[in-house]
Image (cartoon, rainbow, N blue to C red; front, side):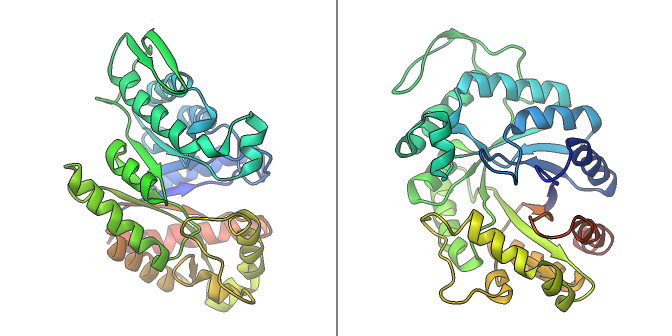
Length: 325
């Protein structure tokens, strides 16, 4: 299983983000992932631009969008900017895409939240063509193209991989049909993920892809012992999930009923505790979901920056080597 890092974003200078990416490559991480949110201080708003900068400061680590909100963009722009990142990086782009869920983000772009699934479908199909064909002509519900050719072409052949964030059944089937991996978001616990994983595996078999590829995105906090993790990160995690994930209806994720404690929130959801516990949890997730890639995010608003860095350092020194073994 490959291990990726979602670095510090939106809570520091971009120079600090770049430094964290350089350290991640030196430490042996396999990939770097930049997310996307708007009207939100937690993440940067333009992941492909950020990855172009990261590409210039790294040499071999994979570069992913985790995830780009594809319905908010014209597919030609995404195809061109994605191709440029692939060229600048020497063929390291993984394009993670999702439909989005926050009403205020769609309102900021003047886009209909109700159209996000159909826009994603049309755009993703066009990305396949724009990255592999010349003189693409298309007449669709949202986009019309006449003899459009993306230049320069991506380095990767036939194209950079496309990973789909998805939860509802039509979205999971879309991920199996049009994507190279299903990218499992960080808000769901294992019980909520498992039925989706079975559906994805079935849809991949029906489309002739075998079992499909599964990538898992998880929040991680490593401390010397579990009580220390609770003391430092417990309340910030609860507040972050209440603010970022439990505010809106979700097709799968349900807020645990009643008073929310870090133990109830973290169970089967967050990689949390001392290094040995974190290793065991990651292996359990990998085995339960047949995951091929784990993307870890260590920074959460409210956790002191120094504590996030200590957590990442402990992961690098004690968890990552154990996983490699």
